[in-house]
Amino acid sequence: MTLPETAGPRLRITEIFASIQGESTRVGLPTVFVRLTGCPLRCSWCDTEYAFQGGENRSIAEVRDAVAAHGIRHVCVTGGEPLAQKSCLALLAALCDAGFSVSLETSGALDIAAVDPRVSRIMDLKAPGSGEVSRNRWENLAHLTAHDEIKIVLADEADYAWAKAQIALHGLGGRCTVLLSPVQGSLDPTLLAEWIVRDRLPVRFQLQLHKILWNDARGR
Ligand code: SF4
Image 1: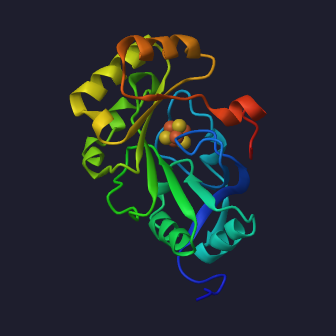
Image 2: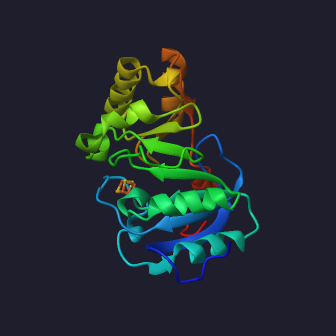
């Protein structure tokens, strides 16, 4: 059924654009990104501060139709912190209902339990170098399944040691894919790759492909 364009709850949206997925196991796939406005965190290395404020109010039907207009099957709902807007849950379900393959990028600070199970949740664990380690909602780990992913962004060797300890303590490698990536310009990617191999960590190393391709330009 087609919803009227203005029906139902509205969301604050910073941008909707088509690009190549730069992270996660979906890396390299043409993807439509829906960036929701606002975030209650302030990570030291945040690269989307422009999404903290502004944006436009749009209905779920408007967002769904804007996504569909790109003609791409994969959709990533990101932010900011998308789950900070209550209507994000309804948007995720609507995108799944419309037949898209949907992923969600979330900070790990908010409850993920009510996210539609068809969605692949890419959940951060915030390392100390982010300045937001106290915001990790550890109860979320119990909700993760094999089609979700944990992402840990590392600013330095102390962050790596922290991540290694959490992986062991919580058995993260047995829950789902664990992604480790360096903060660009802060931690040498080659060093991180060598540490992972040296320690035989059960993780996937990743670089942010969109930054390599487009130097972190907005909307790419
Ligand atoms: S959670 Fe994401 S959007 Fe929010 S401050 Fe951290 S990196 Fe930026």
